[in-house]
Amino acid sequence: MKWQEIRENYPQQWLLVEALKAYSKGNKRILQELAVVDTFSDSVSAMKSYHELHRETPERELYIFHTSRKKLSITERRWLGIRGIS
Image 1 (cartoon, rainbow, N blue to C red):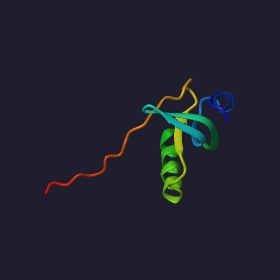
Image 2: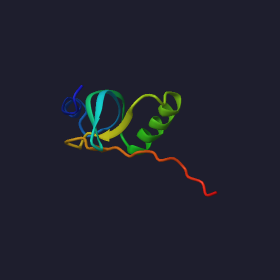
Image 3: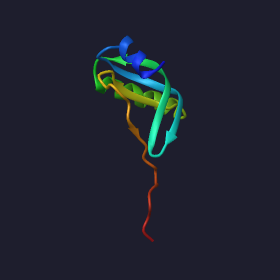
Image 4: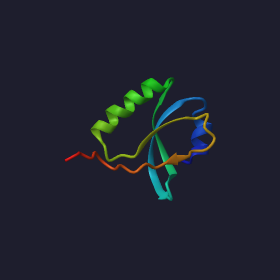
């Protein structure tokens, strides 16, 4: 589903969604197709579910959004790792 469709079908809710079709452009992640994994009344429950699911299947591209957001703007951050001092 597209984000606009999701917003219409799940008004004023916290959602755990999976990106089914996405790409990177510059430092932004563009989500073209999404699937709603679960709905929540609060962000704390949504984050708990996200962490559990991410631990089980870390390869899935999961996000938590509230449907009050008109547009999705996701900035990618590059993982640089931990540097030690020698």
